[in-house]
Image (cartoon, rainbow, N blue to C red; front, side, top):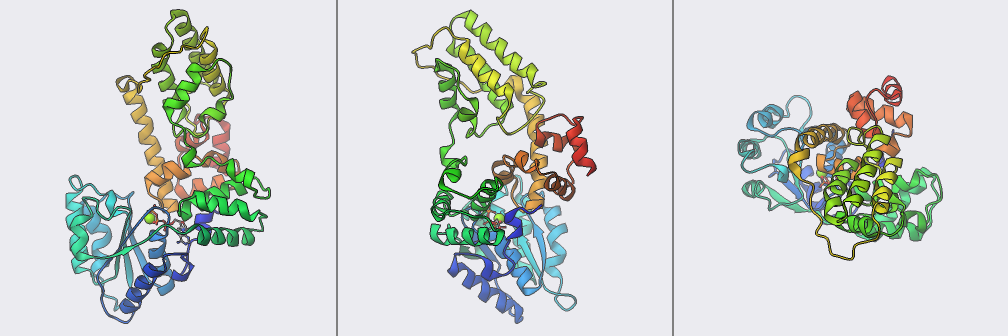
Amino acid sequence: MALWTYKYRPKKLDDIIGNEQAKQIVRAWAEAWNSGKPQKPLLLYGPPGVGKTATAYAVASEYGWDLVEMNASDSRDRATVERILGAAAQASSLFGGRKLILIDEVDGLSPKEDAGGVKAIIEILQKSKNPVMLTANDAWAPSVMPLHPYVKMVEYKRISPSVLASYLMKILDKEGIPYDREAIIYLAKKESGDVRAALLDLQAVARYGLKITLDLVKDLGYRDREASIFEVLAKIFKSERVVRPFALTATLDMDPEMFTYWIVENIPREYEDPEEVAEAFKWVSRADVFNGRIIRRQYWGFLSYAQELLVNGVIIAKKRPYRKFTRYSYPTWIKLLSRYKDKLKKRNELARKLGKLFHLSRRRVITEVLPFLPLWFKNKEWARAIIRKARLTEDEVALILGTSPTDPKVKELMEG
Ligand SMILES: Nc1ncnc2c1ncn2[C@@H]1O[C@H](COP(=O)(O)OP(=O)(O)OP(=O)(O)O)[C@@H](O)[C@H]1O
Ligand SMILES: [Mg+2]
């Protein structure tokens, strides 16, 4: 399994593209430490996917320092901060090499809940005998403000489209994948300077094994194309004829279960004739039954036949479209809270494990890795490698595949 963000992770500072100024500061800082001059901790801050965490890794590997890391998926109460970082902060460099302490995504700390953790971090910043780097997207988040007096701020900016494009082309050349330049330039512009997102998207298109053309790239579900649930509902409820559900829901950032809840909640708001309501519900339940209960089986793709039944069943349930404006409503949480919460908990735990593996925050795993995983898992070798490295359970593999843990497909991957 070779996720490109991992395969091409920067191994030295010069491998990091863009942000020349920031790199200069980091280089001088690392050189100073290397010649025995302690330096103030650095806070690398800026938008996602531009190389903040990668900088820490690159410095550690280039200078041969051990990396001691605390990331957003570790709980960050005082005890944990001290357990993970305390010793590293004290250790002199007399024995063994130097240690680089990385406190990743400090803006994820809650100033209230993690107050003890923030204090413990400040102590580390003050007393550390080893170099310390912190990262954050938002340097002015409430949990980060109290750290300001103890750090030197280093800003990371989005990578310019031209720099990003030539980097992507270099990777494609190395992979031996043919491409049209215009396609890569288009993709680089679309990614708003986020190298990680660009690599993930690029690898997603590359998996077709075709030449990467503009059309292929445009087909990618871009974030800016993301449909709102309200638009999608209006299209379904107002449509006079059946549709290709995938075209409607592909860019909807929502799992099928939640989508079903939205439909169910809003059927009686749109349809006024009780017969229509009954008919629509009939289709919802058919879709549900057909897919062996969509409610229990989770998957992130919307490519299923159940989706077809659900969307088109609801469309044809009406006699004619209502010309009124309907205020669609959020699904009534009370009813679905416990079951949905349980699922969210499972998903978050899965995201935490994958985050450790990919060095991503849970949030980014959810938005950027999970949607791709069902496709990645088509390659059994990759699937098995991910399962092994992230120590996924049967339940979690089932969650990824959108099936039940007893499905032979799950067993097959687990046993590999
Ligand atoms: N400037 C860069 N040069 C080369 N590769 C990069 C760069 N920025 C990001 N990448 C690639 O994207 C991956 C993720 O980058 P990284 O973890 O450093 O992002 P980040 O800035 O820490 O983002 P976040 O704010 O989401 O934590 C890296 O492993 C690397 O493959
Ligand atoms: Mg990071």
